[in-house]
Every structure is written in C-alpha cells, then in structure tokens.
Length: 491
Image 1: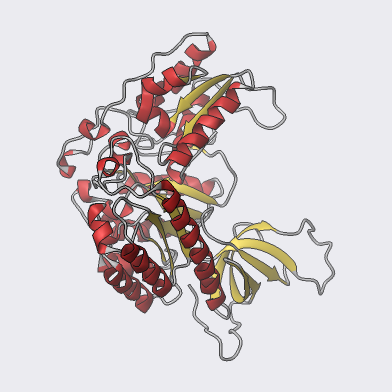
Image 2: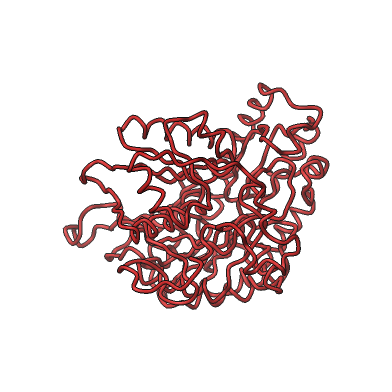
C-alpha cells in the first residue's frame, strides 16, 4: 500500500521488484489473502501521518503481518514501533534486503526498529563530493552492484540498475531524478529524514525512461524533492535543461512533465527549454508557499508577491497557455491580517491553474515549531476555509478562460464502455489531460471524438467548455483550425 507523493510510488516499485527477486509474490484482487501487508507511509504533515497510522491499524485487522516502511517509518523508527506494536518498522537502509526482512517477519521474528538519524549527514556537505559517497540506501538510486538475469518486467536493462516493477498500467509513470533537499525551510522536516540532495546520472534516467516506454508509459512525471537543483552535485547547474530534450526524445514518450520547482532556482534558460521543447510540457509546479515577503523570510524562503508575479509573466510571455500550479501555507507563526491580504492579492492576480491550500501545523524538529506568535488553531482553520473557497473560485475562472484554446490531450481512458457499438453519428467520450493538467493533483479534460481513440494516444482538441476545474473539448484533425475568432495555438 502506497501513501503520499509520486516519489513514494517509485519507492514502492523498487520494493516490489526486490521482493519478487527474493521469491515473494504480489497479492492481487481475487488472490488468497496476503501473508504480509507492507505499507509505504507518508510523514510530511500531520494529516498524512495520521492517514498512515490509520492504514497500518486497518491492515493489522486483516490478520496479516504488518510492516511499515517509507517516510513515517524512517522519521520515527523505534518510537513508532513502540507506539504501534501492531507493525514492524523498517528503515530506508532495509530496502536493499527487503525480501530478507519480510522472510524474518513471516518466520515470527521481531526485527529491531532503527534509531532515527539525520540522513543529511550521510553525504558530504559539498554537493560535488556526493556522487558515490552515500553510506546509507537512497531509494530509487541504484542497486549497488551489477545485477543480471532479472525476471521479465523488472527494470532497467542497462546501466547501474535501479530495480523497479510497475505496479500500475497507466500511461503516466513517475521517474525519480533526484532525492533529498539542501534547503532549510523552517517548516519542513523532509531533509532530515530524506537526506541531502543527490542527483541520478542522466544516462540512467534515459535508460529507465526507455524501459518505462516499453511498459506502456507515454508521459513521464519527473519527481524529486527539488527538481531545479538537478545536476548541482554532478558539476552542472543547468543539467536539467540538457536532460529534458533527451527524455522527450525517447521513443514512445509523448510528454515529459517536471514537478517540484523552487522559484528561487528557476532560471531563464530552464523556462526557455520548458516552453519551447517539443514533448516537454510547459507546466510549472512552483513551490511559492506564501506571497508575503515577511512570512517568506520567516520561512527562510525567497520572494514576494511582485517577484512571483514577474516570474509568472516571464513564463506566460513565452507560453501563454502554460499551466502553473502552487501550494500555500496559511497560519504560519506571525502571519498577520496584512500578510493574509497580500496572499489574497497575489492569488487574484496570478491566475494559477491549480492552487493547494494547507493549514500550518508544527512539525517535530523544525525551527518554526519554536517561533513566537503562533496562530490559534481555530484561526488557522478559518483561514484555510477562506482561501480554499477563493482557490476554488479562481481555478474555475482560469479553466473557463481556456475555452476556445487548442491543446494536445493524452488519452487515459474511454469514458464509455462501447467499442464499435455506437451509432455512426454518435461521438465517443474519453478522459485525458492537457499539458496544463498534471495527473492526480489537477483537473482533467473530457474529450468527444467522432473516431475511436486509443489509450495513450496524443490528440489535438479544441476546448469548448469547462466544469469546475475540468475542461470539455472536441477532438479536431491535425489540419483543422479552431473556430473563427478563437485562439489557434497549441500547448
């Protein structure tokens, strides 16, 4: 069971591959009950931690042995094992021998839970000294040696191996380009348990992209804790600009999408590549977190509302139809009514496609937990409700602004169950996403087509309506222009 972000999805696929090599089988629907339930937990915020605990307790009720892995397990280790005796708790360092760990669990052994440690100290302080220097396992960064004779369906086929077994059949696949983070945001504990920033070599990523394409992926979602830092430990701060065209050129891949961009590190050259390279989505997942310069400084982050609006203007000057999303924290210690008003102003002017609103909560071991002027939880809840309503209204307006635009949609599923049984004049219905819509977190596009489309096909459409954040569109032929007076550009 996988909880949390797309990075965890990649880690789960590594665990699945390692378990298969070790003789374990994945229990699917209709199979006999599982002997072990492995929960890949999330430890990001309080709500995610509670969800992980609930899933572990629910799994314990199945009668199977329960194992906790992932961020919550790594972050709390022995403390979690003591508080939750229903589950055995594993560290990232246990991943390399995960099959052996589950063998021991099945044999009735109680594996000793680890004592949490600051994983930033496992790598040199200087980024350029990090390649090959890790003393602990970094999920998704290789098998640590030559591996041959892999079972069919495990990946990749060449290079320093990153073991992986796809757990889904969708046309979108996450590809981890880096792990860890060197930033010191006062509200975030992720660097302490995910470690310092380390990039994966470009050749490994291109090889894995080819393997993913061979197993049905048509869109790659590049994930990390901070994608704009990619390459700094490999001696090239602009390596992402070089990597993106290579990934977009992998046969079978229609679209490459980058996630987790730090506004302070978004370079003009990166904007140029992301808005002009065929196959690279002009989609900017920008981690703003707030718009008040005073609050951002307290968070140890860059910028303010006007600087962020300037960055958005740069992007839209090159790609007017670019998709832009961001998340925001309200109720940060010391946040005033003026700060709230500044955030509201920014959101109203920015016209973002997707907005996530989160209420601040103290996180163990973070500087913000000890800051003065903590906002009352009831006030935080009111601000979350206020901004969530505003976000919904603004996102609906932004979707409506796209009516008339021409886009390319990646078809993900047929919305009707018929195949050839429709009347010749009846339109077939499909669900897909434009380049401005990321999987899971953004809206989708409902496509009407006079011909039968294939899942994984990239089709040209014109947007004819919107339903909340979702778009409604009709498929048009390659040579067909949009309606008179409407935009005729394509994302």
